[in-house]
Amino acid sequence: MLRYKRDVSKSSYVGALLSDREGDGYYNRGIGIDGDFKFTQKDRLMFGLMGSSTQYPEAISTDYNQPTTEFKGGAYHLFYAHETRNYEIY
Image (cartoon, rainbow, N blue to C red; front, side, top):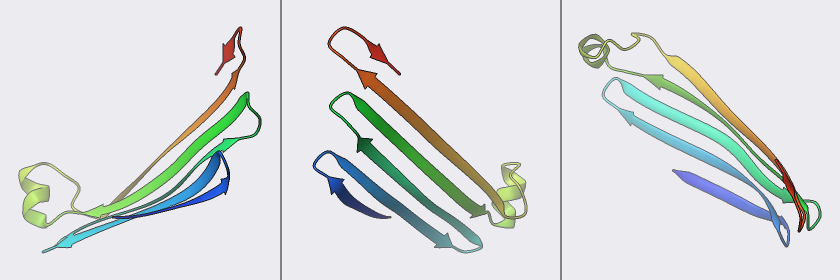
């Protein structure tokens, strides 16, 4: 697993993720980016994007009813907030 994070300003960053695992007839790889940006004292945007690729050995695929070929997946999240003393909007 590798994680790299770079500050963009005092209260903001962008980062990258990488994971890789391999064995006999097996692999799982993941890659992603994320960030947290504070535009003002009241406005914030957070995000993340991730993708993965996996291949199981034939025995595992058969025993656990998993795909017999490579399969891929992905995920993302996006969050925006505006916060004041009297209210919050998400």
